[in-house]
Image 1: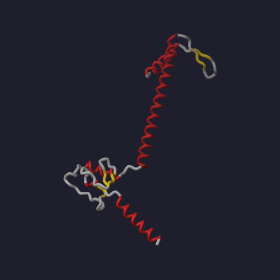
Image 2: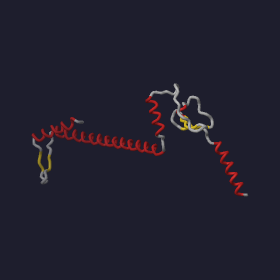
Image 3: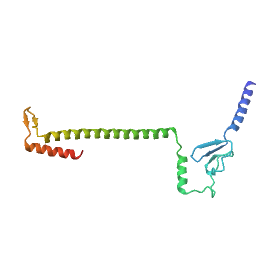
Image 4: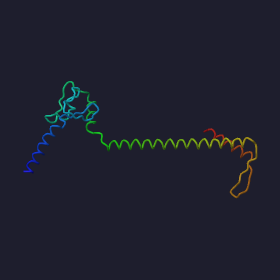
Length: 167
């Protein structure tokens, strides 16, 4: 007796819940699914109606629904590949990697510019020293001190001038 009542209550609940489900399903202009127990607006073409009370709506082509082939193929591509969480994550990770690459490149360019400015300042200082006429000494690999000759000084001045041309 109890089992019979329980089975009847489940059967009645199932029948009433089935009638409460959405009867129409269609795609709006953005490609999002819309659910309703009311028919879609008249602006929605029949080809975008996915489900109607009588079952799945069959796409029919009317003169109003005819579109250029490129628009139709774009719409079908959007319909074929719905936006999922995985594809959103993939797009996000791609944008994140691109941004990290841009940031890294900008940092490298900033470092290179700072190094170039530092080298240019050093070259200008050395040029001033060469032009001042002060004796310049160097230490060789044996630790002995030697002074630049006039020819060496001119060669150094020419090298510094070439280096400063890029500054």
